[in-house]
Image 1 (spheres, rainbow, N blue to C red):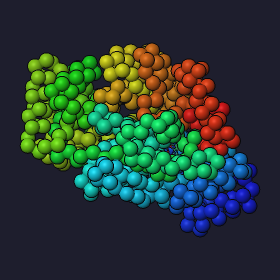
Image 2: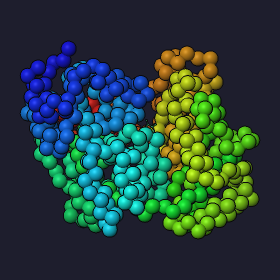
Image 3: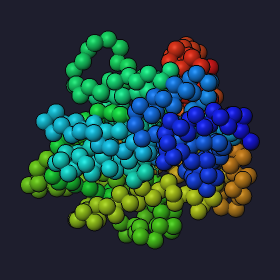
Image 4: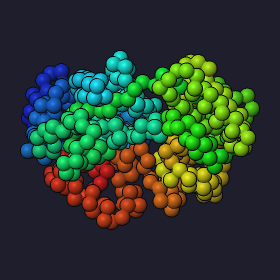
Length: 474
Ligand SMILES: Cc1cc2nc3c(=O)[nH]c(=O)nc-3n(C[C@H](O)[C@H](O)[C@H](O)COP(=O)(O)OP(=O)(O)OC[C@H]3O[C@@H](n4cnc5c(N)ncnc54)[C@H](O)[C@@H]3O)c2cc1C
């Protein structure tokens, strides 16, 4: 049962018309569970507005009636940010019907899109115009631009192009009182006071609902050099990264760390994935360079880099992708790593960042600390080491029950987060806080920072109707 009155729900339904809502439990089900099954929610109503004006009318009515709203895009968040609580009194506002590419300005290198566009759709539209929208993440077939911006998503090309925040020039946002802020500017220079768009980016829907964005485009790379590289240690990996940056003149696009145990899980559970290198090694790096010229120069740089890496003991072996299919196969291994932990039982997920130079010491210290409290635990530390970010995900010991292992989540994640914090790191590098870390973050940010966040939230959303209970409590 919901506390929301039937006539109030009817008023929301009337704003979007018959195609724009559902209360059917079967239709609602996929919107109420998080990708990893960690959070379940309840709602009496899901609204699918078709325009910014409809979003504005929904938020205005919510503001007048004190109704809580949960914005949702592709629902691929990993921290429960887009899932309502189980109180059954929050309405989901899904942006997925707002999926128009509004404009492409090739000479300004910008694309203007509705917030509900799926990332892959935007990548494709940019490519058709001869441009690159460089955001690249495993969920790109389902996640939306609004979700990417609201979580300040990172992904596989941050090293070269930055994270979501770096890819936005302008935003259109429906504010908590229903007014529309049109900040859809395609300017690379605009020093006219506070940068308001930066407040909404990474706010996980707690300050406003993003309805449109002007995004940056780049020239399409003409050639890639991709190597699946065996390295002796994370320390060797970051030294190889430094060498790659020196030798390639800024061409390093992706640099992903993969541990042997993670590769074992992928090969075991993903039938289409094979080990690219015959011998077994402790660590691997998936390294990608990209270039604007297809004259073989990127291959020469990659070969020279691997040779020098071998001479310095940073590289043990390497397989270079000889075709687009092989390149895709290497990336498939990387993308399968998270999912391949599922069949191995319980897995505790920590998305941490530390300075790149501290990453080897972090991995060593955190591994020892977790092994000390759970002997037999299998540490899968993988991901964007080039950005100083790994997903440090302990998998349960083979002979444990999943629920017994997951019952240790808070204890284990606190150990890992304390160590990351000790290296001046972050407990959420790219996934956000959502409901998962809303309380934990108060141990790691200063009281002053939390107070400033609360003041911003209270000012932008005085009735606390936008995704309450996520990111910061007020
Ligand atoms: C297989 C897989 C791989 C992933 N890889 C990465 C990765 O490499 N890097 C990375 O950063 N993340 C990654 N993610 C996490 C996730 O895909 C991103 O956080 C993504 O940006 C979420 O987009 P979404 O549209 O699914 O948002 P949702 O999950 O629907 O929402 C995320 C948050 O944003 C809010 N929100 C959504 N739309 C709006 C809007 N229009 N206005 C205001 N608030 C809104 C929601 O309320 C919620 O708090 C991965 C997830 C999966 C499942």
